[in-house]
Amino acid sequence: MQDVLIFATVLAPILTALVQLVKKTVKLPTNVIPALSFVIGIGLGAVAYPFTDLDLVLRLWAGGFAGLAATGLFELGAKREGTTK
Image (cartoon, rainbow, N blue to C red; front, side, top):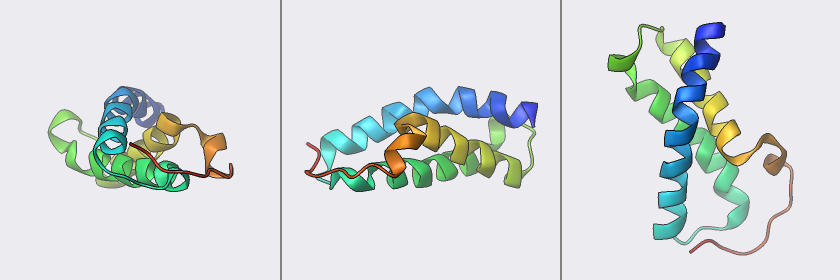
């Protein structure tokens, strides 16, 4: 579990930058940003196989954790109105 958390810590800043890039380029409702961050995190964890020797399931968990950390877990339940960009 310690390896998953370390890998999530490495992925979080990268994921934050990717989500910010998506927010600036695509007009999206703000209430979908946390879910988008979670999905991008899982995808980023899946494609990060050259950088770690973790199993696929553990990389997916780390990506999910990083996605939640990138936007803040509390944002999942917050009602957001408006759009990005």
